[in-house]
Length: 69
Image (tube, rainbow, N blue to C red):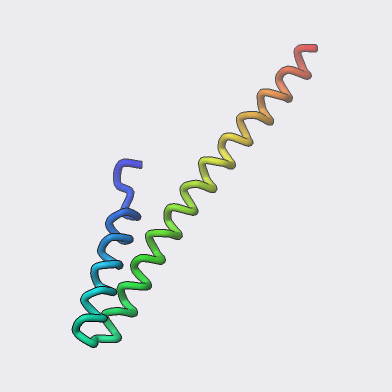
């Protein structure tokens, strides 16, 4: 996916967490945790989508092979 925001969210989230810790800004730190988690969830969703697509392709291939037997 060319417009994948997850790496940006993970990096920005970590930076916000660090800035929040250094400055004592708990809200900024929490915002960073949320943003990092969003990036991780996007990665997980993309991985699940890819895995399901691969499984669907294998099932289609198996069904087609049985039809040809």
